[in-house]
Image (cartoon, rainbow, N blue to C red):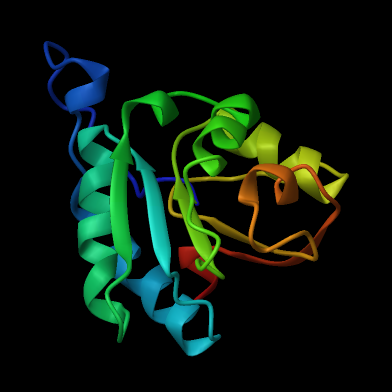
Length: 157
């Protein structure tokens, strides 16, 4: 999932420190509610440590009946598939559904790579994939074949 819409009003603010704007604060829980409704509540959220991804994750949590474990990983800030592969080495095998929260262009490139076709990701888009890899070893499963199930977009909810 890509973080929800962030604020751009303060040019003196470092990119890493940008918070969500009003639309983003509303979109994050809407996407989370849809994920829960579809049975895609995560066991684990692995997120960039930027302010906007932290706020996205925090606003999503109330929608999930069982609170997922949340990890904020500086290695996912403005990263892509390679960083996701490295993060997957630390995901517990017991986690059946992992929500990986980050930024473009890396997330759009990763979604496109896994889908085998171009996937556009605007803010708060969640791309749902199913994999059939060894569930006890996310580090190898992330490299296996994935099936694109759906793309959730706030404006379509």
